[in-house]
Length: 403
View 1 (cartoon, rainbow, N blue to C red):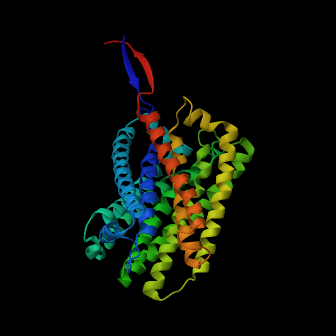
View 2 (cartoon, rainbow, N blue to C red):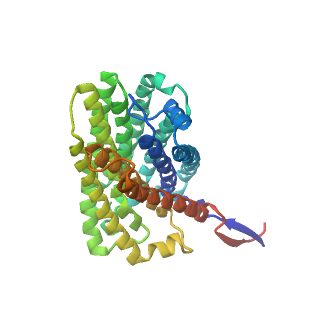
């Protein structure tokens, strides 16, 4: 007899794409240090030159923050791309199995939307890597924006085709959608994918100085963002009805938190659109309006965070699937909410409270609120490390007959 060390990840499901998404999101959390602590005059985001100047002239604390940010961005961007490549390879193999054909004829068909979601996240992360590590990138950025719009548009079309396949199948005939298995927010994954495409499409609206590019970004991001909201409304209402009847599916319980990253992604989309409308089309939003907008989004996040954590605790999810011996690819859905909450807090504190004059930047209140964002961020770093060990390390020993 020989001993084979099996990994949980060897039993592949498309939900593993969320591991790549979470890593990309963590790269964004480290970029928040640079976004709000490094001065970047005349530009909406800090670039290599701004970061180098801040490191050369800044205080030791700022220098330390820049080093941590650069290491964090680089490490999690690598993990993001590594996870994306692995998942695309595994998905290609998975499509040749009977399990794939069963998936395509079940409620779980929508888990395939994790693929375009991950690709959109990786495009966003790649742009951040370029801003931080590539000198003189800003001098050619206007040429990159049409390419970015094209990449996100193609990813969005891919997502729409997958959604069309699913809805076309279940809506054309009755009885093809299992309502008893709709007792989670798993059907929110298509909305999350559309929202990730939308926030990527909105980036040129905030950064470009070419009116045609800004207008294109505004229209396309609005279209995908609106589609995400419509899908969200339908999925949430129908899922709640099923959960009230059958309870929440334990392995899918982390999806109850998916509203948290959705609010962050769509919130950043709106902020980017507002900036583009202001700089290019002379539209104006007051700092107080932005503060209240972010406060409402944060409130929605806290409501669903409380709901999700209550259910997860009652079901003993963390004891079983995070700290215990059981594994579920759906555990990676826990990373995105923590990442999204961290990012939203940074925006709420800096673009909301500080910009409106409610608090002073770098005072005690500022750091107390920012500390919550940092705690959420590093809790998710620890969670990713834990989940990767669980799913990609040798998890169990199985006796296999010798040939």
